[in-house]
Image 1 (cartoon, rainbow, N blue to C red):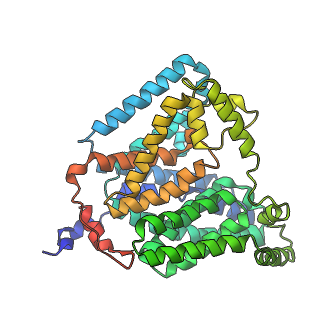
Image 2: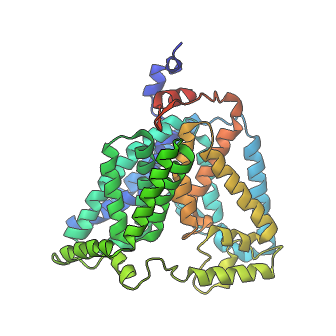
Length: 428
């Protein structure tokens, strides 16, 4: 019997709201930026368009709970107990940590954001609802295409209509980054030529923004796909060669000349300099922007209290008007070396468990989220505010907690391209 015959036709036609919510959540920064630009053009207030989007997300989320399956909760209970214990112990010994654990909880959750650890942790339960990884992956891919189409419009308005320096919006830049990471993985994995256009749009947006962190996240997708998913040695060698040439090209005069030409063309219509040129002209393209000094201070202070650390948010008290900018140093500083390394080892195990799992669709989602979330946390932001991090943890622990229902169908791969129908059958 054909393996795809197990897929019920009526089931395929139903909306899968957990996957839809997951995809739309990552579209939020681009949506907000697009309608902000429209408001600058047409002079309307964005409150209505913003509330409409949040209302739609709440509807998707509420409907998602009808897909929840809590019959296997062992891993969830263990994770929750450990989290509550760490949170309670930290609060008992350091009450001032409430500033980073429960601050602005209600108002941020209403808009699917977080300014505290507990707020971010609640997204763990949202991730735990997701069971159909094939539909979630497909929704994510569709939304990424829609989002990058919106990016093209938003950037055009920023550059040529309102001429605003949109590249200072890091939330927008990293929002674009997630979509580009997804498009790049799907382009490499499924080889749909139309994704070349969407990838070019996204990469151009990131270059214009001049943000180096998001570009590193996109590069991580290429590296993971090359060395984990690609089986042919020749293709791996070719990919490494192309990456090497690209890196060399970035540090050549030719690349600078191309950027300078683009900068002059934009200047001719009154647009300010590209930010990435500022890095190049000041020889700061590979500069850490002071992060090395921050890492040094945090590490030295951590060594002074290696067993108990400084508590959640403790790095903020060690550095004036700054934070660790690195998830490794941040966790070690907060929890000490012993508990900190245990937490980091668990995160590595879970993420690579997702990347290497037999379910190809979850592996794809895990690769994109590792590149766009964990790599980001190596340079910027904080795990305290990372709703995406806890969203993935819930998603992966849901998969590993239901191992008895996984059919582990071997996905047929021909020349590095995965068979979507076989993978979808695995989820039903």
